[in-house]
Amino acid sequence: MAGTKAKKPSGTSSSPSTSSGSCITKWISRLAVFFLFLAGCSWLDTIKDRFYVLDPQSLHELAQAAIAAAPTPTSTSFMVDYIISNLTATYPSSTIALNHNSSEWVFNNAGGAMGAMYIIHASITEYLIIFGTPLGTEGHTGLHTADDYFNILVGEQWAFNPPNLEKEVYPAGSVHHLSRGSMKQYKMHEGCFALEYARGWIPLMLPFGFADALTSTLDYKTLYYTVIYTGREIIRNLLIFKI
Ligand SMILES: *[C@@H]1O[C@H](CO)[C@@H](O)[C@H](O)[C@H]1NC(C)=O
Ligand SMILES: *[C@@H]1O[C@H](CO)[C@@H](O)[C@H](O)[C@H]1NC(C)=O
Image 1: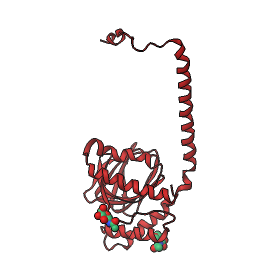
Image 2 (image 1 turned 60 degrees about the vertical axis):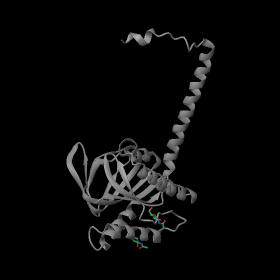
Image 3 (image 1 turned 90 degrees about the horizontal axis):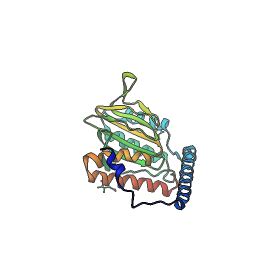
Image 4 (image 1 turned 180 degrees about the vertical axis):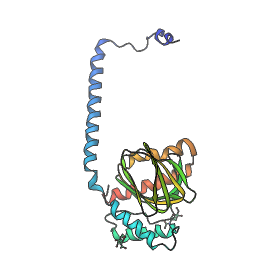
């Protein structure tokens, strides 16, 4: 069986020695382009910090203030409105483009978990969303090129990161920092909503965000609105040069 391939005639692609020189040149230039590309990427990675507009510490304080101001611990809509009006008052529109329409919720299936999200801000280097579900969900965090700060607003998030066999518990008011390049199993225990802030290379996170829709749910409506809202917010921030 293994021999059948080797016995096939190699008639069609005859390569005389004259073309092998140009073939080597071709591969050398391909390698050069590839290494230039890698060098460009690592240079971009060293300067990405200068594009950040938001910061994890003040967002954590804002999440805690929203929880403290809410009439009940499950007043999610109140907390969302509180966060939007604070961000709008804090950052002028010349500094950051924010999405004020809190009706723009879309489902999000990623890493086996399902919830809904509202994109507050998205650029090439940062995003800020509300993510959660009143039902609970569980899955893989994904392996990302960005640092992720998960500020719990309502409920509790659990996480598992072997070889530590104890469960990590993140209650409302706490922040779960998933550093770039690490991954965990997580659970939005019962009902849970969070203010999620990611900083790093956002476009490289998008395949994880779309994979479940493309291979499992086939929910093209959600996919359509996710692309429209994300793309629109990234473009709005590019236009004011807040990459
Ligand atoms: C926004 O929230 C932060 C954190 O709680 C607070 O320090 C700041 O004063 C608030 N800004 C406005 C304009 O409400
Ligand atoms: C807000 O989003 C909803 C849902 O997409 C849409 O129906 C509505 O027209 C939007 N409102 C504004 C002011 O853009």
